[in-house]
Image 1 (cartoon, rainbow, N blue to C red):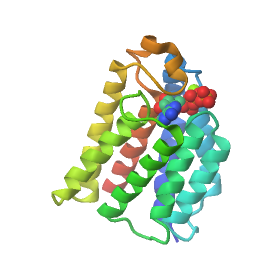
Image 2: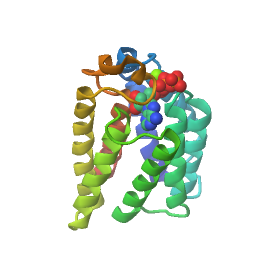
Image 3: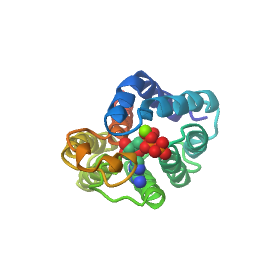
Image 4: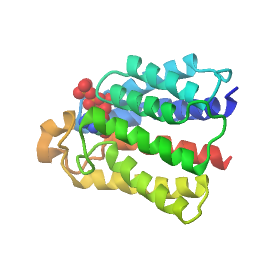
Length: 206
Ligand SMILES: Nc1ncnc2c1ncn2[C@@H]1O[C@H](COP(=O)(O)OP(=O)(O)OP(=O)(O)O)[C@@H](O)[C@H]1O
Ligand SMILES: [Mg+2]
């Protein structure tokens, strides 16, 4: 049984679906106005396909990744799909999540995104929220912080990452076609990635 991970994913999906228009509007500024639509379609399918009866955390995340891969499309479908599938490998067979488990899963997710998207920090993508979030998370748990303490720091860093994306030009993805005209706009993927971390934080805080 994996009721908690299912409930958490459902909350992530609901948040993304709630923010469909907001994410799409951000992508209208520097892309092709589909990020929210893409992600909402993907998470609607994820909520349908996953179940509290799936055997463990890894199984739910694997199904999530595969579903996102096949339904989201665009750049973000393969990237988020890979992220969830890589996290699933790390959490295979687990029923509970320790602070170290979450770190390992986030690391694997980011490595998967980077392998697939060939991007680094500073290119105005979801990585500008996720990489600082991982760094802040790791620092907090290294000093003895709990999973939730780490996530509080991760979310602060991810929010700062969104702000940072406003100050730089995109060098990856569709927004890179705009060059310097992308400066001043926040990255849609960094925004959806930050929302994801915030939902996990709030879910675990209870
Ligand atoms: N190479 C990459 N590495 C990491 N993230 C990326 C990369 N390319 C794009 N992104 C992220 O994807 C987001 C855009 O996702 P979206 O769903 O709108 O796909 P898209 O760019 O419209 O795809 P396509 O151009 O194939 O239609 C960006 O805001 C950015 O955060
Ligand atoms: Mg787009």
